[in-house]
Length: 73
Image (cartoon, rainbow, N blue to C red):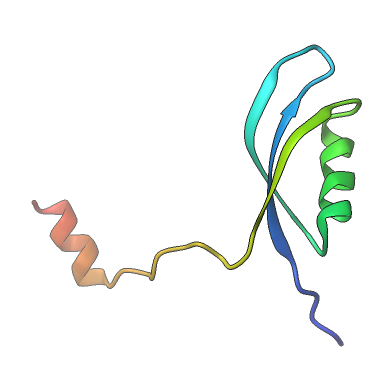
């Protein structure tokens, strides 16, 4: 079984009623797949901007001790 590689795409759109929605994050194999998923949720939207985010962008996980020290400050 082959693992699929997904990339995160950040969209800024204008909905069909004119509202601007920023920072919609959608995973896809490529930009066209991410836009297809976007248009399933927001039909007839206008894509104002699309930014490709490669990598997970998450900070390294904290240890139990790090979390406890934050709570007890």
